[in-house]
Image (cartoon, rainbow, N blue to C red; front, side):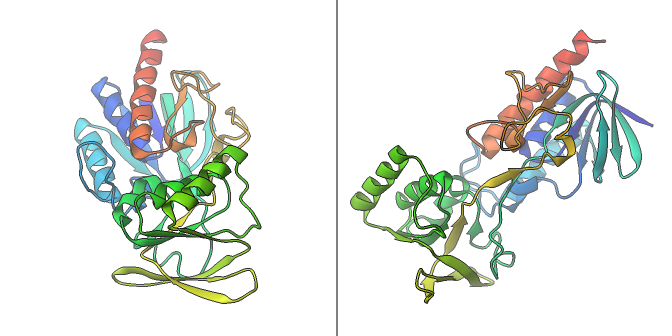
Length: 309
């Protein structure tokens, strides 16, 4: 039987930061990860908005976080969590059939960007296919890029990219944008002033074409079925995100979109169970905000343990 003060489920930036803070608080800590260290952040080709690093790959940044947590004494356990039995100061987590007990739990499973499913998307991930304009946009300054989507986040991303990229070709599979009227007016104003945004409605991406150096071309069908070939160094896919909360949807309070509801201490409705990073209800989902969440969650977990010894 394994017993820890803190069990962190998910090794993204939030979970890794939580592990660092938990270990610095003198708490025995295990990080449970089913896939890869860093989660979605590790797929980011270039991170240039994280303090202290002008430019670093997402995988390298997360590896540094993991190394730091490990040097402090945090353990890492790889495997799929199949069940959690929540009980204050005695939570039971089943990982690949093995029992892990923990006084507190920090949920950090993250949220995955929805993929398009077009040909060449998987092959060009990290080589021009991007899922976050704020994180990856600066890497394509003064380049021609494509933005795919038609909802609020896509419109916001198009505005953002138009300020740093040479041109932004928007591919929307709907006849119009589904954002609010005020944002739409802002977008229309941006189009008129910048003159570097073109919009294709009722259009569908059919293929991303690249080579070892990166993305080269995006192919799509326009509203009359004609194939259009657009040279582009990057394609930003902005069609929403999905929180990875299937494991806890029957025991943890979630919002309508499936994100975990937390209080100011990042505690869930389950006593001694905290959450951090992209999996929680929040406005800004970035590596730096996930790290801040992790620090708060671990500090709150330490306080909970001290109060319930």
